[in-house]
Amino acid sequence: MNRDKLMASVKGEMPERRWTHTLGVMETSVLLAERFGCDPVRAELAAILHDVAKYWPTSRMETIIREEGLPSDLLDYDKELWHAPVGAFVAARDYGIEDIEVLDAIRYHTSGRERMTLMDKIVCLADYMEPGRDFPGVDKIRVIAEHSVEKALIAGFDSTISYLLLQEKRIYPLTVAARNDLILQVREAEQ
Image (cartoon, rainbow, N blue to C red; front, side):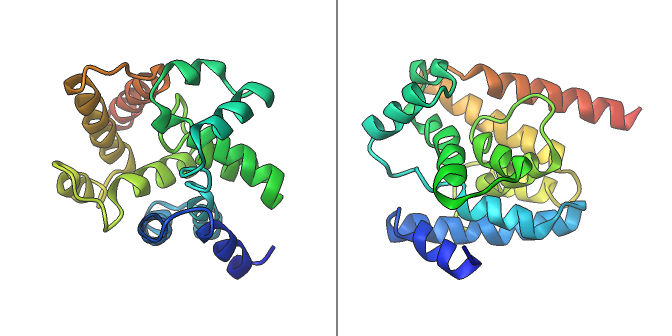
């Protein structure tokens, strides 16, 4: 499927305001990929597909999680997490994406994980800081992202974790693991 057909198909899966967000994530992913030495074409592909299942009914996502062997512990956490692994599954099944790194960037764009690839980091960070995002701390993330994808992503995860703590919600373990691993990466790079 060529890029224009892919974009039209994904656009049909979400409301206009979410498509605007997706365009922002695409633009930001390309910018960050070029800044930090990642393949901008593959980062953009992951960005196009990152929210493909975001507006699916939760029952549809739950069915895929249960029937396709996706991590069932997701069902114990906020439904906002579900669309990422479901989106990776859909990208492979419905759009024929075979690039594991692209699929992983879709799969982990909300939670992160230990040993995130540069592509994982780029798409996850772009999702945090695309131009349409407007939450307390996003400008700080954008400034940090001028120099360090890891430090900016730590600030993003801090924002998510703080929000979840204030809401008295559970924190998905991969997010904590991702943050801790990024802190180690930054310390090792600075030694």
